[in-house]
Amino acid sequence: MSENDSNGGDVADSRSSKNARKAGLAVGLAAAAYGVSYGALAVAAGLDVWQTCVMSLLMFTGGSQFALVGVITAGGVAAGPAAIASAAILGIRNGIYGVRVSPIIGAGFWRRIAAAWVTIDETTAVSTNQPDLKSQRVGFWTTAAATFIGWNLTTLIGALIGDAMGDPKVWGLDAAAAAAFVGLLWPRLKQMQTVAVASAAAVIAIILTPVMMPGLPVLVAGVTALIVGGFNWFGNKSAATEENLEAEGVPT
Image 1: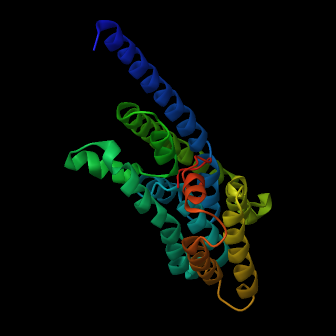
Image 2 (image 1 turned 180 degrees about the vertical axis):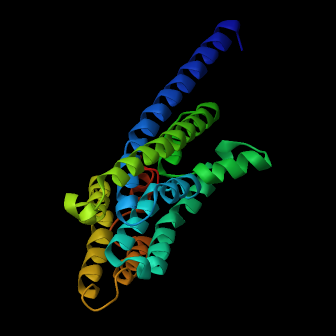
């Protein structure tokens, strides 16, 4: 390889890493903005400020967090087991993402522990969309840092706001968790497969809500969504994979 070729390769490598860093920061900051909503909704659901913040720190998967507080808001403490189960179902996909990003994050026990904590939609999407291993690694860790720090800071802000507002019903926040979750889902409805999964889950939830205790219809609907999505009856595998890896708003 000539010196010019080597220099050209270094420039391209530097450019791709810089682009990955920019993408990671942009996606991380955009995702973190939703933490304000989560913090306020969690306090409205009955959690105190510290419980809300610890959940974001340890759980760190926004979709599951919204699902948990949404079920608790609807059914109270009695719906706790169903809320936890619903959150766990949504979190399964992060384990699947781990298989994809494992070659990217590099070796080392502590590095892999840290990566398992922050392997979410956003980090997976940014890292796998980069052209080479170095920029993939830069994209993963930049997105992870930006999202983790930002999400936890905005969670605290939202929790303090929600705590200061008092009774959530006065402000209509008792119904806001469900609305927020629908808002997160809506941008993903781009393929027939995801529309089918969402529709099947919605129909099941509507039918079961009058006859089952709060929280259980959501759990059954989640299992239905996994079955419909797992068989991929209405789409091809590549389209489903591409859609699942999109960075849409919240760390999931």
